[in-house]
Amino acid sequence: MEELYLKEIELKDENDIVDYINEFVRNGSVINGLSGATSCKNFQEMYKKLQEMKNLKFASYNQEKSPGLTYMLIRKGDNKLVGSFNLRFNLTKSLDDNFAGHIGYSIRPSERRKGYASQGLKMILNICRERGMKYVRIGCYTENIGSKKVIIKNGGKLIAHSESLISDDYYEIEL
Ligand SMILES: CC(C)(COP(=O)(O)OP(=O)(O)OC[C@H]1O[C@@H](n2cnc3c(N)ncnc32)[C@H](O)[C@@H]1OP(=O)(O)O)[C@@H](O)C(=O)NCCC(=O)NCCS
Image (cartoon, rainbow, N blue to C red; front, side):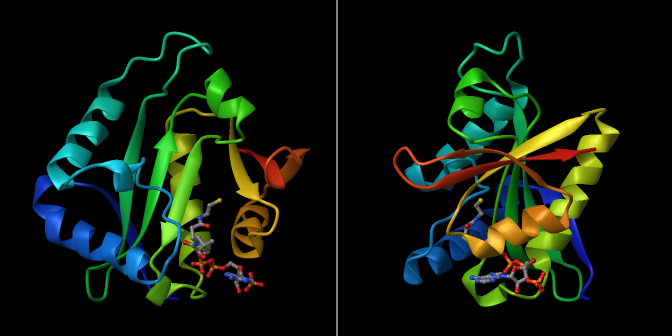
């Protein structure tokens, strides 16, 4: 297995991030784990949004947003950006009710099915442990077999299922 590492997004990563996002667009793939980056006008706006998220204070379960960090998953051998992971430190009612959970992630289309998401989630869970978190929740559409396997391989247990708009599963991982 190739060695991977996580790093926070910096301003100098603009070209890599834009190239990464464009690959999803070209392939018609959904992108997760970039904290809603695709709704931003440009990289600068996205970067500002990530900094705001990082500096948010968590006051109560009923607040709208949770503080969190966004990581790039990089392959050590060639420093290629292969994936993105978004970690929210606290659950809010809105995240919980919508099965959004603590963690979102994507692997770029050309680098899928190499075990990268499984390995990346394992590293994110270690960060969660270091921060003293006791469990994480992750949502996943029932039809998303790849993501479901990634979660289960990392200890995920199904805690809820919804059929409201689209069939959706909610997992919890004890840390
Ligand atoms: C879901 C996703 C993150 C998986 O990334 P990945 O790096 O390909 O996952 P892994 O290589 O770690 O695969 C884990 C397992 O799932 C399997 N798998 C991966 N994609 C699959 C697919 N499309 N269909 C069936 N199985 C799949 C792998 O073969 C592997 O199985 P194994 O453990 O039996 O060997 C990636 O497809 C992606 O970015 N999708 C778009 C965004 C997304 O859905 N994010 C998750 C939101 S919950």
